[in-house]
Length: 338
Image (cartoon, rainbow, N blue to C red; front, side):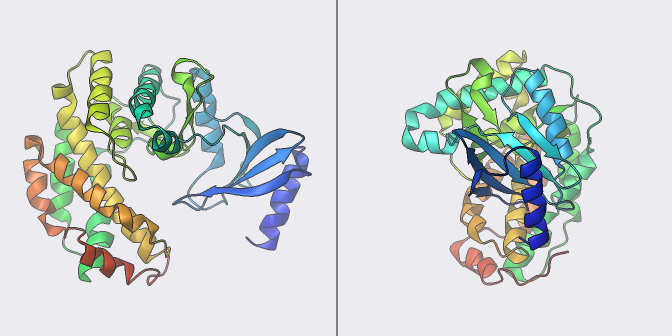
């Protein structure tokens, strides 16, 4: 952090009445955002530091947060925000991330994930807070070019021609996942959800990462939750959440399966490329450990009959064998940022 940025944060906290708070590093993630926990006279808060130009707009976070709160959900309350500076002071929702709660008590997985599914049903029953970005099937498919561009190239040294993959994915999305839009939070997974058992109903799920929220398909966040790049979800838990989600929408699991497969393949392709890019460009190799899981999720989605054409096109991608992962790791930080 530069001295100028540190001074800007100090001034922001002072103006918010938290200038004398004790500060400690809380978390960072795959983005440029940074978080600190603040403590003052027995009270706690969280500082979000999202420098302008980093790709995350705190004004978007604040707007979507207010929408979520209006639905009776549990985003962190905003205490202070400076959009121009990219700074927010937020309610501290605690430390009980779904990942940690389930690690301590595996039997908690199904109840927590069912509650997270209830959040999606509540969210999707309400009109989205327009305006929001709304990508076409072609736009989404183009974003999957990260897989050949970064992941395959990191393994083989040459990016394969990915036009056929994009075309097949766009066709699958148009056919199976291009209906009426809802608000999607995009990074809806266990690492961004907190368990708040003292609250009731869907409010028991604390929501953290939603500033990139946009319009999308109802199954997008469902797939994000159940096909987690960072942890395995028990098949029984996945089946229970899928059944509850489909039934609440007057559908069957079989009816939504093609959309889940297409969106799951989209997400897996993007994640393969993003995790490889984080290593090559940002020097962050800790995400490579997740590549085999994401690859398995991709193969599972491609096994659906509706994705036969896409399955054939994805043959251009090498599997993340231990040797191929080490090839990627050996190039960690070797490419300049754009």
